[in-house]
Image (cartoon, rainbow over all chains, first blue to last red; front, side, top):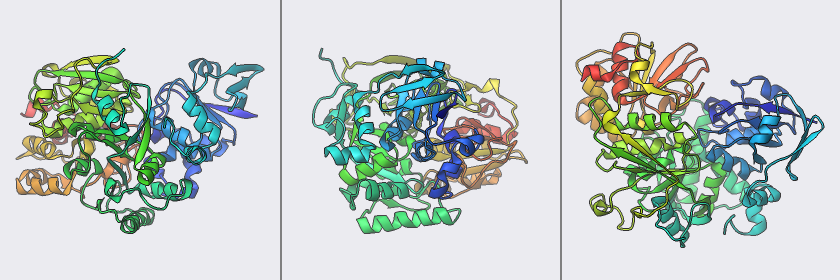
Length: 163
Length: 414
């Protein structure tokens, strides 16, 4: 069983991991401790592997810092479901193998603290006995996630997505 | 259905070796890939450990900068910088710009590393700046930059393009920063997500002003910001003869900004799109004024501030920090006397680089403080305490604000 951590619009990368807490300024090993350290201080203490982030519009806007999605991955976040994602965050998260779903109906149906069961590979999330089929990702995203990460994809396929 | 191409489509098409349409995935040759002290250690690690490629594909197409925390502020950043220097030496990368040379984006443009007509990648979101000189510049994360270092290529989705037409002349007291803040206020911080933004009518602004426009398109969520130079003037700007948008190119959206109607604009906490005319925020108490960054640390920005502050004094309680965007800009502002005007007015100067923009050094904010900055982001906690406020505006507005110690309209001092 996993829980939902719900966020609003325009969660920027400074909220996810402030630049002052980057691995460059602190240490790579400590990165998961700094996820939402100021914006939502209970998050790094209480998040459990398998938990799901749900957010409204434009999740991950701002800088190109890959350590923002990396911190969430190392916290064990199993998927992020949002109305929409900012461009660089989307790319970084997919490269790292974090399943992202753009699905406003699912966002509306999921609330902070909900206990859910997620099957990311099947694109399915169950809450309160109701199963939501998440809107399918674009094919190239599915292919990267099926391989694991972008590095796995390129190793397995011997080419870039779209090549 | 055949139609003409936007600038983004033309550049990506050439770099891919075939025509492209918005929505296509394309694999493209990268003209230059760059990283900076804060991210390059991760890039190096990913290249070696994830992609398992020991050497960069072409050291001439890799650039490295020590600007985000320059000089180092603690042992961790010093170690990271030492690693960047070792990597450059062992890989034969000669485009290493170390402490004091300036902000990556300024140097990418000034030193000719970002070239017109090429796809240029940076491990920093403000790489959209290169559209000001005719490159398709875009920011990516450490993994993508590692892949570009290792292979000389990247893959990307060809963006749709949005057209922004600038008409009229900027009035006195108003700068290109005000135009881009106004656009961000109008469209919102996801107003151009995944899109390229093409500016028309920007060719008669200064080169520095064009960089400010393109740089801040990332604050709209854009993938690239491009200046569309008129076809008949390409030679005048030293641009390739093919680098124009076709008259029948397809745009998903169009906006017009009447520059003549603009007033100085201010972005208030906590999102860049919280924009108003300066009138709405005049009088808000400010503790620190920061003039600098890839957005507004150029010579014309220092000149703008000096124009207001020469012969005057900044308010006694204000800390005014000037950080020129490059060593050349620092030297020019010393040589032409503009910097001494600012020092005599009570400002101080730090090492060319990113300065306190990311809240790591050289002007970190305490709880309860307010900073007026010429940078590009005012997200909560970005410059230090999450209980500090950040206001964004032009160098002219910053100078007037320093003078009064509260947000002020620069038009009163011209």
